[in-house]
Length: 68
Image (cartoon, rainbow, N blue to C red; front, side, top):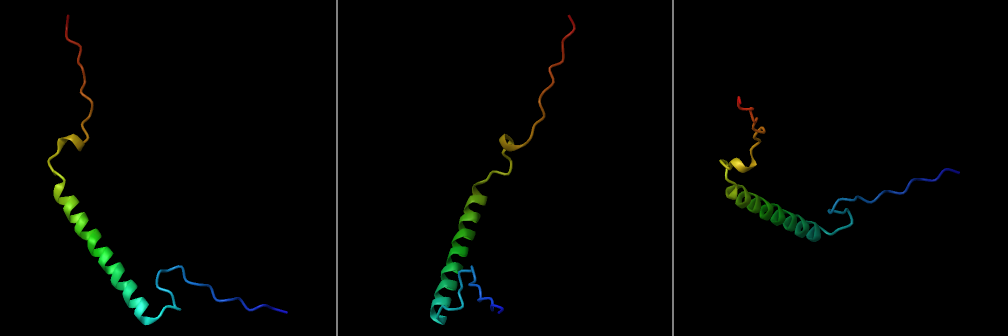
């Protein structure tokens, strides 16, 4: 006797069993979260100083021996 595999539930936040209103609300909420992250990213990028030498790689300085 062979068993029929049961359908697996989706792990995504949008589930098939949700009502259309719940799906719409969740999509709107996810969209607002994406917009908030994009705004935060823009603010963080504007704060970065592109000429900050502190973060650039600088090879170690050689200490040449002076002639005695």
